[in-house]
Image (cartoon, rainbow, N blue to C red):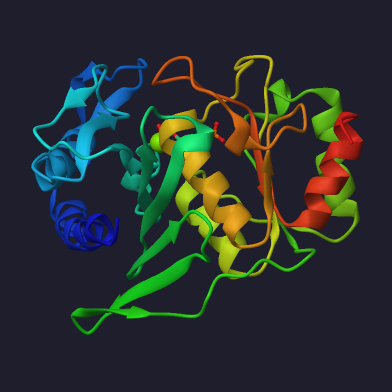
Length: 282
Ligand code: AHM
Ligand code: MG
């Protein structure tokens, strides 16, 4: 798996060059789940495909930007699922965006998730990697090289609160819970990009990120394979928790369709315990 992480570090530099130099406009088509695609979404997808399609450890690639599974020549056991450029809707505002990778050993599902990684394209490039059962490792790219940086460890209780979706469409219990956190002193930190928003919670030692079911999106917005499960593994490995709104660990999820979505919550232990009480699933 280390070879896969090394390739992620290399492809991060190529994606960064694209983000800096390419047009941020839309193409005419939509992607597999009906989202409008940017030229950048497609270009990043192609770069990642090219970087991994001949990797002998990988037998298949599944991209958020493609409907079909891409079977590779490699005879390895890993299926690499990825969101090539998360945060397409904020890249035109020049906010931080990211790429997310999930490495499944066999069929993609929570129990088969063997490793995960994400890249943050902010003022500088940062990468977090994790192998299941081990601690996450954080790297930053400085002076032409990746350096291992402070470890990521979540404290019992954090201070940040980030919830997705439009408040108009939140359920009453979610509204009451989020207001309760603010009344308890939590600060709002929400950019609309899950990679920088979750990265901020991880590096600041805790807090809560929610993307709940809403009246307009009953299954939430975020995709299980490419977005939810990789961050669930990283939060659990950092000492936090990641659950759905029935209180089940996200890492127990099975996957019915490559583009399936689920409500999801990632946080330190205190906030997740509070969430379970508020949702009546403690
Ligand atoms: P994208 O894959 O189209 O960029 O959508 C995913 C993004 C996440 O990064 C973010 O957490 C979420 O959409 C924000 O959604 P909302 O604007 O509904 O809060
Ligand atoms: Mg995405």
